[in-house]
Image (cartoon, rainbow, N blue to C red; front, side, top):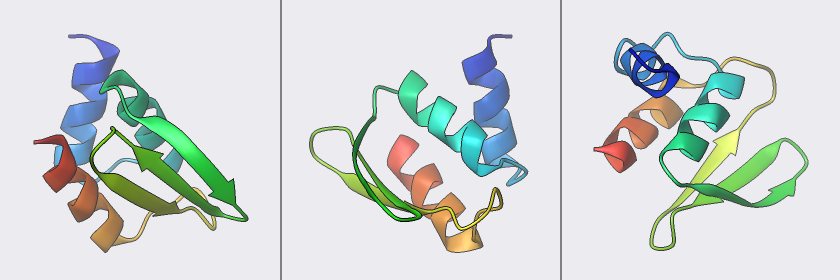
Length: 71
C-alpha cells in the first residue's frame, strides 16, 4: 500500500490532519495557489479548495469538501 493509498484511507475515515491533507492533495496533482494567514487555496486547474488551518485539526466541512473533490 502506497503512502497515497494510506492517506486516502485516512481521509475516508475522517482521521486525517492538515499536514496529511496537504500531502494527499499534492499526490492528486493539486497545487497551492496562495496563502493568506491561516487560509490556503489549493487548485487542480478547474476547482478550488480553501483550507482553514488554524491548527493541525480540520473542520468536518473541509474534510467533506475534499472527499467530494477527490472522487
